[in-house]
Length: 149
Length: 73
Image 1 (tube, each protein chain N blue to C red):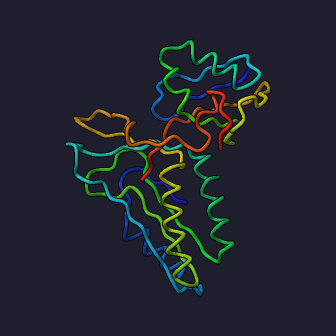
Image 2: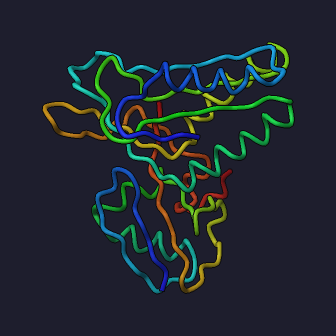
């Protein structure tokens, strides 16, 4: 897992991952590249990350991937990322295509729902929490007394 | 004492409370106008492990993190 301040250098990161997996006997390599879209008059998006829990969340997915003979990669930005730049890259390498196709779907969806990352719109140099686009994590509600996982 | 840290968009400084479990923390947060909106929608970690049981026992020196709704990518 790799974290960078600002927009991601997509070519450098994905080429390095490809070099890494091309030496092993993987038959499939799928990348997902997330890019900041021009919408709602934003200048940029900005991200806060809680690294200790992001790291353990990622490691638990790496174990799942390894059990299927696959390997997961991920890079994410910290701080401001301008429109048109990339803030998120993930990838899965697997011996055959089905495992990678399914795993990239499950991994990216769980990333959106449970990775401890907070997003802000940057409009006129002000950061506004993207609350209506955010999802309570698994376990949310425990303070309301709900038994929940 | 138990240290409470509020992550991401919750703009509240860390606090230290003399509490025994998450129910005590919930009672504290309900009394604060700036914190009560986060009670129902936040997840909780103790020493960086997500906790899902409300009566989870807290010990002095524990570090509790409040994690509001997320949106990576």
